[in-house]
Image 1 (cartoon, helix red, strand yellow):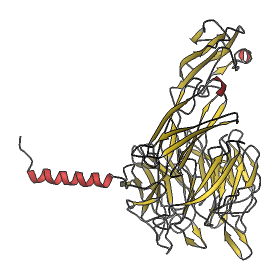
Image 2 (image 1 turned 135 degrees about the vertical axis):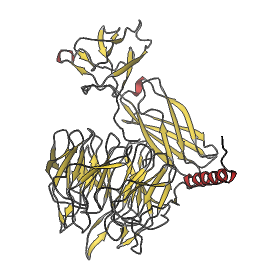
Image 3 (image 1 turned 45 degrees about the vertical axis):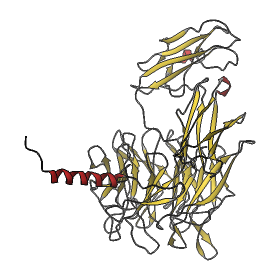
Image 4 (image 1 turned 60 degrees about the vertical axis):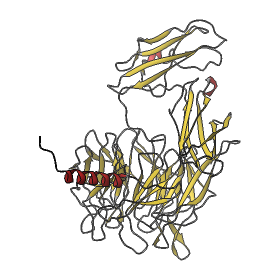
Amino acid sequence: MKRAPKSLWILVSLLCFAALLKANLPRTSIGSWTAASSLSQARSNASAALLSDGRILIAGGDSGSGPLTLAESFGSDGTVSSAAAMNVARSRHFAVVLNDGRVLVGGGTTTGGGAINTAEIYDPLANSWSQINTLTQARASATAALLQDGRVVIAGGDNAGVPNNSLEIYDPSSGNFSFAGTLSASRTQHAMAVLQDGRVLIVGGFDGTNPLASSDIFDPASGSVSAGPNLATARYAQSATTLLNGDVAVIGGAGTGNNGTVDLASVEIFDPTANAFTTASATLTTAREGHQAFVLPRNNSVLIVGGTSSGTSVAASELFTPQVNSTSGAWTYAAATTGSNVTARSAATGSAMQQDGLLLAAGGTDASGNTLDSTELYAFPTVKTDQSDYPPGTTVNITGAGFTPGETVNITMIESPLIDTHGPYTVTADQNGNIADSSFTTDSHDLSVRFWLSAVGSTSGIQAQNTFTDNNITVLSAPSGVTFSVTWTGFVSAGCTGTIQGGPTTVPGISSSGGSALVTRDLCNSRLLLFLTRAGHLSIGPSHRQRYRHRRFASQIQAVPILQPTRRTQQPRR
C-alpha cells in the first residue's frame, strides 16, 4: 500500500487542530457577554430557532440592502455553518419550531417592501426548505406560537403599514392555514405569550394611530377569542414573557407622553387566575422598545436585551427576577442591570442554547445604524432536578452550575400552596462552579404540592430558580395509538395492615389504548382504586368514573404507579 506523503499528514493535522480551536465556545463569565463567531451575512429582523440537535437556525432578515433568503446555523460548539437558502426572501417574519423538529417560517416583508403570505418549512435532517400553502392573509411583524396540541397560532401584524385584526391557525397534520377569529383591535408590534393552561395572551401593540392598552385571549380548546383586561399603560414594541409561576411579564415598549412617543421602563404582570394586570414596583434602568426578552432556562430570570432608547440602539442588558416570599407565598419582582452587550444592537435575534447556562444574541443594527454580522454569548447560572415530578418517598437530586468556585450555595424549597419550607441546605460549589445535593426526599404529605426551588450563592449573590412537583392524580382521555408501560410502587403505613394487591391488570371499562390499567385494593376501606400520574392517559367508561378514583389517605395504603407513554411530544425546557 502506498503511504501518503508526510507533508500531507502534517497539513491534515494542522487543519484538524484549527477546526478544534474554531469549535471551542468562548469562555464567558457569569452575568457577562462575550463575542462569538460572526455570521456569514450581516442581518437585522431575522429569525432564530433552536433545533433539536442543538444548532440555532438563523434565517432571513434584512442586509441593509433588502430582505434575504440566506440561512445559517450557530452550532452548540460555537461554529457558524451555512444552511440551505429559503425559497422566498423575507424579513420581519415569524419562525416556530414544530413538534417534529421542523421549522415553520411565514409572512414578513420581501423584496420591494411589501408584506407576503407565503410560508415554508425547514427540515434540519435534509437541510432543505419546502414551500407550503399560503397564509390566509399577508402579514409582517405578526406574532406566532406553538400551541400545546402542536398547531401554530398567528396573530395580527401589518400589510403596507395597515395593522391586521385576524388570527389564523397552521395545522401540521393538514398543512393548511385557516382563519381562527378576530381580535378586539387591529394590532401590530404587539406581544404574545402562551399561558400554562394552553390559552394565548395577545397584548398591546399599535393600531395605526395609537398605542393599545387592550388585550385578547385565544382559547385553542374552544377556538374562541375574547377580550382580555387592559394594561395600565398603552404600549407597543414591548415584550411579553410567561414566567415559571404562570404569570406573564409585559416589559417596556413605547407609549404616548406629553411630547409624543416615549420609551417605557415600566413592567406589568398579568395574572391568568385573576384575569388582571398589575403594575410591578420594579422598573427597568433603561427605558426601551423593540428589545428581546428571554426567560433563562433553569434560572427563571428574564434577560432583557438590546432594543432602542430615544431612537438609538442600546447595549445595556437587564435582569427581571421573580422571587417567592417564604412567609406569604406571594411573588415579588426585582429588576437589576447585568453585563452590557459587547455591541449595542436593536432588531437582533437570539435564543437560549441547548447546553445549560448560555444564550446567543445575533445580528441586528448598531447605534450608528449599521447592520451587524456579529454574535455574542451571555452566561447565567442554572439549577435543575433529575425529574419534574416525584412520587412520595423519592429523593430529589438537585444539580446546578455557574456559581463561584468554593462558595457556599444555599438551596431552599418553598411549597405551593404554602404549608412548609425546606432548607436551606448548604453545598459548596466545586472548582468549576457546579453544585449537587440530595438532601430532600418527598413524603405522602407532599401530594398535590408544587415546590419552588432556589439556589443562591452566599458570596456572589448569584441565583437560579426552578420548580418540581409531587403531583396528585389526574385522569385524562387517551390519544389514539398511544400505549403505556406501567409500573408501580406501594407505600404501606402502620395504620393499615395487609398485603397490597394488584399490579398491571386489565379492568372492564378501563382502557389505555393497548396498555393496561393499574389497580390496587384499599385494604382499610375495601374499595378498588385506580392510581394514575399526570403523565398517564387512560380512558374510563362512564360506569366506572365514581368507582375508580384516587383518594388521599394519610394513614392508609397508597399505591402510586408511574405511567410513561412510549411516544412522547416535545416538552418545554424547565
